[in-house]
Length: 328
Image (cartoon, rainbow, N blue to C red; front, side, top):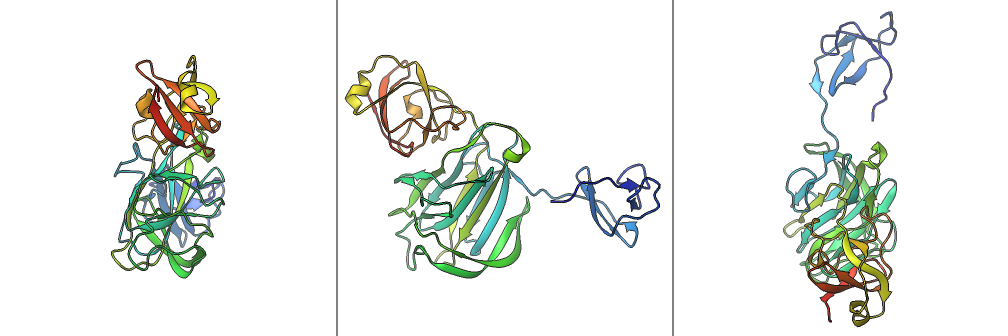
């Protein structure tokens, strides 16, 4: 990130100036280096400004939906092993931010997501809740991958290349080493619909707009590693009528009277439905539309969407593990 200070031009605009000065009297030339204004940059060298160019984008914009192949989506196809850094800007919208990896079939990787200085490592997929239980990168993927298979916990890699997303391409940097998390979270077979939960954004201030993502692709020969990572723009979750009283079983939940409270489900591709079809097994559920106030405590709850009565079971991680219609 550059430093913002006052400089003075010998022209009427940044584009037609020939020199940059540090004083209003235009007597002291600014040091040789790079200067930018209004999305354009120029180099001053030997006391003269060189040609003007547009500043490259550094942040990627977020995606409009989890399966998007446009902005906010990164396709890794037989990518070079290494460590990949990207910064995704979520704009001014507020709500739940949802990182998504659609399919890991004979593939595996490590990933770390940081927002507002907090590491988010709680994921769900078709096998359920996944978390390493620490703030180190989580390792996800298919444990049935062909030999040599996914790296074991504690595997050490040295001299791995780094790549940073410039907004249009991966730019290679220096080499680093890393160690696979002491706990891995691989699926027994391929892992579909991998969601990271709980990244809430309830303010549109600048410090909260960026999400930093680091992806670790380990050395692997047969076929390379292939997957798509997407980070969706924040969305306010729709309210679903339910009874906030917790019950020990589905029968008692279905017999509950009244559904005047609201619950908010954050694991569906479609975030507009306000009925029982919105709630799916292996998705996080929340108590407000920002996903910022936690989840209902573990137990059974009645859902009433006017057209049908149903129930859901929530585990201690805030994940829906059962959904059904009433009576059960």
